[in-house]
Structures are given as C-alpha cells and as structure tokens.
Amino acid sequence: MADKKGKPGEPAAEAPPPQKGEKDPEEPKKKSEQPKDEVGTRKGCRRYKWEFKDSNKEFWSVGHAEVKLISLACLIGSLVMFTGSTVHPLLTLIITMEISIFIFFFIIYTFAIQRYLPFILWPISDLLNDLFCCGFLVGAAVFALRSRQTVPTNYLAAVVFLCVAALFALVDVCLQKKHFKGKKIKRNVLVPPPPKEPEKPVAEVKPVDAEKKKEAGKPKEAKAKGAAGAKGGKK
Image 1 (cartoon, rainbow, N blue to C red):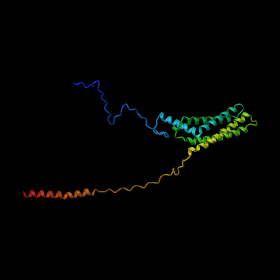
Image 2 (cartoon, helix red, strand yellow):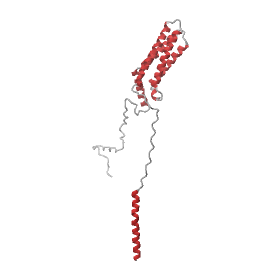
Image 3 (cartoon, rainbow, N blue to C red):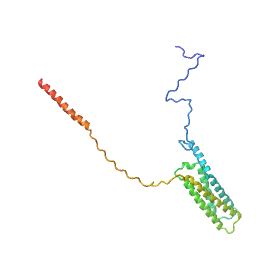
Image 4 (tube, rainbow, N blue to C red):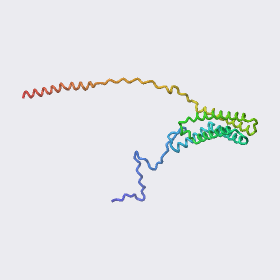
C-alpha cells in the first residue's frame, strides 16, 4: 500500500469545512443582545443585576432616597434630643415606628425587592406611608408642646426635627406624582361585554352531483344487461 503521509516539504492538508447545520466547535458562544431600558429575557443573576441597577437609578435620580434620608436623620436627631429630658412614651413610640418604616422602604428600594413582588402597589403604599407619616409627626409635635409647661432647648430642638421630618415626608408625596403621570383611569372595567348573538346553523348541502351520476349510470347498466340477454337468445 502506498504511504499517504505528506512529504516534509508539502503543506498540511486543510480540515474540511463544517457542513450546514453543524456548529463550529472553535466558535465562541455569543450572548444574546438585551435592551438597556427593559428586562428583556434576562434570567437569574443577570436579571437581578439589571433590576438592582435600575431600581437604584430610579430611587436616587427622582429624589426619593435623598428625601427619605433627610427625614430619617431628623427622626434620629429628635430621638437623641428627647433622651435628655422626660418624654411621654407615646412620642418615643411614634418616632421609633416611623424610623423602622423608613428603613423598611429604604431596604426595599435599594435591593430591588419591589420588582419581585408585583402584586403589591408600591407607589401607592409609599404614598400612603408618607401621608400617614406627615400626619403622625405633626400630631406628635403638637402633643409634645402641649404636654409640657416648660420647654427646654433640647426638647424644642427635638420638636423642630419632628416638624422638618414631616415636611420632607410631604415633599416625598409630591415626588410620587411621577409614577401616576400618563396613566388614565380605565372606565367600564367591571361592565360585562354584550351577549353574542347565537350563530345560525348552516343548512347541509346535499351532494346533488353524486346522485345525478348514480342515476345516469343505472340506465347504462340496464342496457348492457339487455344486450347480453339478447345475444344469449340468438344462440
């Protein structure tokens, strides 16, 4: 048998090109291009990374984060100022409650948890929280001034912090308008659609052509039988 190995001076034979339908093993896998402004078909860690960036971008660019941080700082400052004097326990309860709620919403928006809980209307819940927060803090400030005959400096500073926190909660309410712009109320949502008219039954079309062919074929068969009988009689 002849040796099929190439000579040392000859170039090596090239590999055959891949046939249609076969993938080139050396070709790297390309990631599918995803839109920057939408989730697209991202899944798993890729989706959470996009949700995390988009949620923080929206939270900080609109101004919700700054307003909530200022309100949280004012509430902590008022709580610190109240520690230097005797305070009604109701004031301490209201301040600690509002601090915990602000921290809760801050964690929710920072870690994009609201994107994975779509059954909760987060803009409306945040709006209601700001309204109740403003009302509670204003009421707490009025109660704090009426419950004391003498108002020390640190006590007055704590009341001022409460009023400032209530003011920024009201500012956050105004910032919530962005989430409701361009959204119209759908009317007649609960009205049932009009009943559909019952469809009339279609009359069955009889196969007229087939019956005609059968009738036309019968006299031919009778003639053929008559002719065969006549031949037999002649014999």
